Length: 79
Image (cartoon, rainbow, N blue to C red; front, side):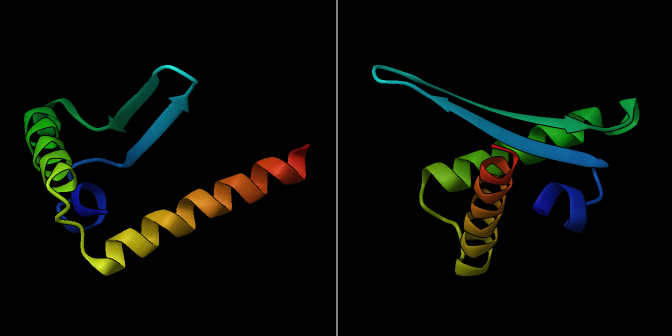
């Protein structure tokens, strides 16, 4: 939300996680123009640092939870 909606640094941004029993993979991705790439990387790094410190406000946390629940429900519908 921060890098796309508030700062307008990309037209698509996403995250993914692939958990397993002994390790997990977490990644982020975004689609932007070459002139905004450095700013997008810097802003994304700042957002990840805030998350690592637990500095996520309630609205952003609820938005993220709702996104996960939506995708899980969508996946279940597809079978």
